[in-house]
Length: 248
Ligand code: HPA
Image (cartoon, rainbow, N blue to C red):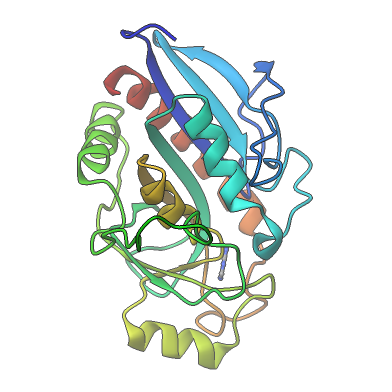
């Protein structure tokens, strides 16, 4: 890779398992961390090399708790990517973050358990404790905010994202509790993705796409209509990513 080459990593999730027809690269083996969910699809966008990885696989075969997050993030690291935008479909506990909203989370509460969540496990030379007070890269978040402005896209740039274990959705009582805890949004995949990115030295931000209101907050079943909402909102995400490709 040349010094001047601009590279952007993009992680897609529910509603964005494919970005388009790019060149598929078989860069999956990330020993000793195992295999990434898929090979990257590579795109040239605004003079930037964009590497796209669907975190669940192109066929969405890995449930949130079964994703090999370590391999996914290491694949970016091995490819020399230093900025990764993650797209996350989420539920909302806030009326002002209604379905279809795009929200750049600025904080996380982690409720996941039992996921392989760190590269620092065995044979350590010294204890390793990353600073995670601010779980997302400020500098990269600013670029995402600027890209949204340039693309005329409404982006809410503050929210606490609660990350639950899934794959089931929450009970109504759990959503009430999550809201009391301070969670504005609820998703299943940002952890341990975000902390692994920090461990790997990758600047990472989470672009949350609200697909539904949290369980019990509206009539009917929780994610009725979510696919349609996400489908429409992802068109905005694509525009934002195009602008972002100019800024990295
Ligand atoms: N809860 C958790 N994860 C989600 C939701 C939700 O309501 N919607 C989309 N991902």
